[in-house]
Image (cartoon, rainbow, N blue to C red):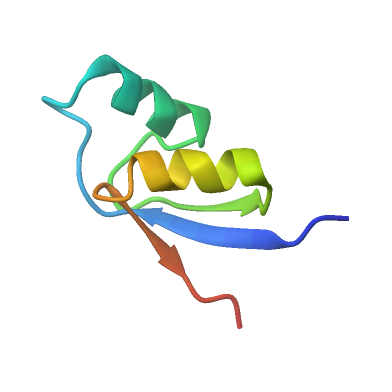
Length: 61
């Protein structure tokens, strides 16, 4: 089983390019300040890097 990453949407996708909006939806975000637990895979890491200005990785403790 892969590790999990906790990520939070900190900025809106309004006015952003369609690929960035699609990436937010692909990660499962629907609302601002929503927190999601996703698997830690290279694909997910790439998605987070692509929209790093819109999301924040939260420590898993």
